[in-house]
Amino acid sequence: MSAPTHSPLLTQPRAVWAVAFACVIAFMGIGLVDPILKEIAAKLDATPSQVSLLFTGYMAVMGVSMLVTGVVSSRIGAKRTLLTGLVLIIVFAGLAGASDSVSAVIAFRAAWGLGNALFIATALSTIVSSSSGSVAQAVILFEAALGLGIATGPLLGGVLGEQSWRGPFFGVSVLMTIALVATAFLLPATPTDRTRTSLADPFRALRHPALLLLAVVAVFYNLGFFSLLAAGPFALPDFGIMAVGWVFFGWGLLLALTSVVVAPWLQRRVGTVPAMVGCLALFSADLLVLGLLAEHQAAVVVGIVLAGAFIGITNTLVTEAVMGAAPVARPVASAAYSFVRFSGGALGPFVALKLAENVSTGAPFWFGGTAVAIGTLVALAGAGVVTRALRAGHAPAAHSPAEADAELVGDLA
Image (cartoon, rainbow, N blue to C red; front, side, top):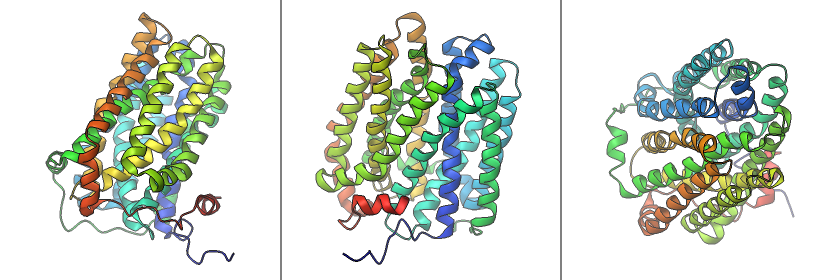
């Protein structure tokens, strides 16, 4: 059989690859901090729930900041918005690493969320608009960058964290500086939009039932997702920094592989909405089993790694659905969806680790599993609404049989 003459994932414009590379570095920042949560608590005399604010403050600021990403991007252009976001991350990650109190680290980590919001929302829309293939293929590339960054972040965080808890924060600054240079030189200048986005546009977008429903589902899903990230290290008391890094490397690696390979395969065979509902149900079950077996560290390791598969598939399917859920500009849809899911899901880590402090090691997983179960029921109840919206002509192009699993893996290798 001859090699395919066209391979969308391989023949992207340099703008797509530049932003995708920066995305890998950006998403390293999430997993980079995870292995040192226990170390920060010990060195700065902080409780687990205080340390959880490194996630809660970060996610809350990022969620609210999503409302201004379209406003900024439509006025100064995508490239300048990306660069601004990267500069903010570099500065605040470095300040967090230089801090001597947990409150200062929390504050600078929260401010870091503003930079991440400007970068992530603009990166997704830039990859989608600049891609040479379908929207579905562009989302796969974005999710692959997300997964690769999340997978490698914990390993790097473990290596740097064994030297000092400050190392991963300074590591983010250095890596983001590399991403800043790559984006500045490899991404061509982007014009400002002819139609400027207003602060009200994301709220207007949420009037569309399918987009609002997906955002509500994502709130409950993210409560489970970020509860897992925050509570996972504390459920492994015998694991050192590097060991926690390896566990979350396995989690992120499975997330990356399933988002790129399994998600499109499931979408072709059972459809976007049924696959999304099924994976949400499995993720909920995984968290509930973790709650049941939280005292057994081997079971916790397996549960965390396995969760990566359900998260990877769900991320890809929900992101694609959001891109086609409403007849609005994709950056507006992304901003509206991200505002609801990040703002709503921000409480997850704090509530989870408060439960760990006052109830039991398994309580955070019971909380997360219950939240995802509620999201699953909401998705099931609104399946018809989302399906009709996707059939109305706003949905991403379906994955074609030509996008075979082997070809996808080969393109990314």
